[in-house]
Image (cartoon, rainbow, N blue to C red; front, side, top):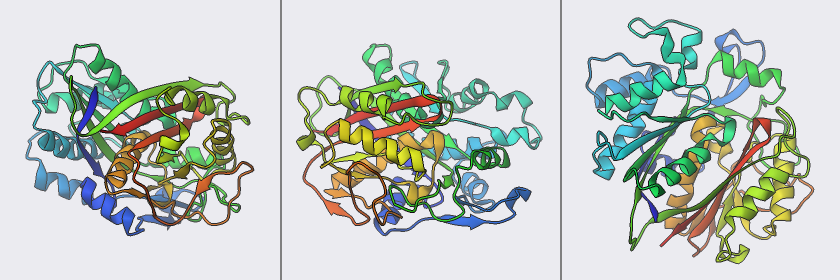
Amino acid sequence: MIKKIADNITSPLGFTTADNYKAVCEGKSCLKRYEGKWKLPEPFVASLFQEGLIEDWFSSKIHTDKIYTRFEKMVLLSATKAIEESGIDASSERTIFILSTTKGNVSLLERNLCGVDDDRVLLGVMANVISHHFGNTNIPVVVSNACISGLCAQIVAKRCLESGKYDNAIVIGADEQSPFIVSGFLSFRALSSELCRPFSKNRNGLNLGEAAATIIYQHCDNMIDGWQAVKGAIRNDANHISGPSRTGEGCYRALKYVMTDEVVSNDIAVVNVHGTATVYNDEMESIAISRAGLSDTPINGYKGYYGHTMGAAGVLESILSMKALDDGLILATRGFDEIGVTHPVNISNKIRHTNKKTFIKLLSGFGGCNAAMLFNRR
């Protein structure tokens, strides 16, 4: 069995999982409209750390003479907290680091940082910097598969632990925002200049966000209590470089694969969806959910709290779902109002209650990639 033994979320809503969970339960968000930021020509809404906050928090929590980028500091803050909570030896050869990110040190493309080599913009080099900080000499794994990276990384972790080569897997998902990223999404006409409205009739685009989130998994022969990663799937439909399949094919196939013979729709507390609030993504997810026989199963999404945190999304959103179900809650979908997809989905902008301890995390991304993972608490 693959058991979660620790986690941490570092975001504009807080530097611990507890702080983030409390903020979401209270309906809070740091999404804000920016005009003229980074001299970009169009306004956008995003959840960004306050200027200097990461640097100040890092210097107060982690004492080192080494120079780290802003992105690396985000990662180290999240990972350090989770590792301390877990009690594992992060330097052990039986521990593997797995990093989920889409852009990593993207800010190095736009400005040089004294004492930081240019090659730190390469994801593999950056990952080595992170693992070496903890004294780990294994070659870290980098997962960069667009928006589904956070779930892909957890699937990789599960496979690594099941191979018997490792006892622990430290999965870190992180991304920061930059002019390069925001201008790219603006060119797709994918961003909203208003707060995003997932699955709503008048949704008109996504918001972006930055965060780092860490889950530590451990291989256990016998598990009495705790969350386990049961089954994961990645299914690519290769529909279009940026547009999702109109029939939700890859998303549907990923959902069906993780719904094992022992798990039926009535057993599932919630499907935590990607829910970007773009016209085609939400529609595609509604079709896939309907095809999988999950129209009556509650769904929810967290983009209305955090925006789209890219490589962090799959990790952050899995952690929040676990925390909520520990308390018997299905968190509200912030920003949802009037249903705006053609296939029925059971979504609400209110907190709901449940006694079930099984959920599915669902993601989709550029290039027609889709991922789903089934989690259960014993």
